[in-house]
Length: 390
Image 1 (cartoon, rainbow, N blue to C red):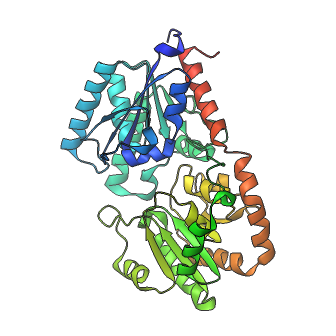
Image 2: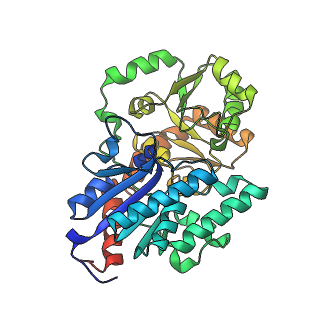
Image 3: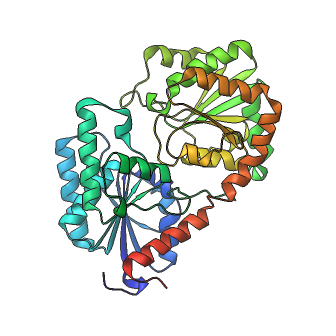
């Protein structure tokens, strides 16, 4: 691509659901401050007051862009994306999330957008098999083939993509140490929270040691294993608590009825639902339990670490790069409730281990994943790709 002045370069950022703009919160505004023209697009929901993460950035709704596979909706979403690209004529289209990646990269290729970037923040295909696995494999291959550059948000995710032969290694790059957006360590800082925000949560929970989980309350996040491990642990440590922060998605990834019932009925399990600000909930907890089956580079683990929480995580992409065994947390095999139970038990009973991980938690995050460093690296990536690298 011939070099342009920054002011003439137009970037179209696309995600599937508007909620996913939380994954790149503040990044679009930063790019505008650097002189780029930034347009954003996504499927719903479409809040009446606008999308808070896009304050000051132009947004174009894409009502047919939905997460579930739907031939009709997907064809309409592709049509809308092509229309948007033809109208706006972006120099760069940059997509996140699988469905937005497919539609964005395919439409960008059809419309000859010169720079087509897709950020991979996880591979749903890893937890599927059979016909659905084949479909998801095909989706990823089409997306990567249509992209000019593919940016996995962790080094081990890049290795996974290569091992599955989804894309050629020379098309794959990782920004910095990983992550799509880094972590705002000034915002996620325990010391800045007023005690009156945290103390009521602690009193409501009771107990002496609280494990927190933040995310979608679905099977894919290891909730079945978490409930099994915690109920076993709580028999030995009656003062232990489990705090679940997030929404159930029974229509998309339903929990087994017995697990759902246990969550709703167990006196030591507390469901906080969706929270716009998770910091008080982190501050009220003692450790993060995050036994997810698959991730790209989980913001939850970054946030928990920045809030001084040791983390128990699965040995999966992203998690096993953020967490260093025995330094800022513990790593357990995915799908393994027994190993999860043992790790949670160690967090409660091994005081020296807990204190060591707690003391290291924030410094290890701040030294590797500061948000401003990730933004600057992304800016340099744009400059390099457009030939405007000064």
